Length: 231
Image (cartoon, rainbow, N blue to C red; front, side, top):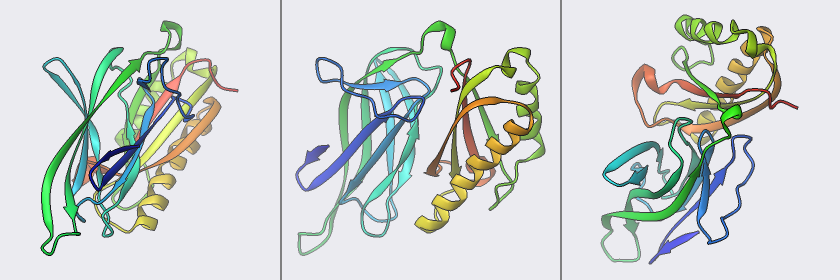
């Protein structure tokens, strides 16, 4: 939990398996490349977005955005790129605060920076990432997405037992229940397809909430497969 005045945010790093990650010995938050970040907060401007970046030197990696609901809160998952280099970064959270304690609502941008350490999987556990897309407002995979998954499952090594993490997303907007239901349905749709093609292992399905994008590219699921890790 990080507090700045009345503003509060929390982050909870998740491993590639979806488990909570402990802090390092010096108190730095650990992020798994290919894992995710559960984040939430309150006292933000309703209808705005909270953006997440990883900064290292002059380079900035955009992780994604979460929409702020009508009560000024946000909550969701942000994926950590599987190809991100290991090392120390600054996790930057940008948003617009909403101080309703004043007579007139005072809105102002705010940026919070948190020191984090990105840890890569061992070389033999390097993951394969596939991003797939869906028909509008449904959990039906597009034909190009099926072809992308087919290319992956044709590889002989992919008949082994794996850890498969699938995070479904929907476009901006929509009620909380709609976003949660459809994003989870999209993750389940990918899991059914992979299982039907003989991909064995442990499946971890997550609802990622609203996507940071718009249009067809917002209707997607992030699929991460770690070889020979299923149980």
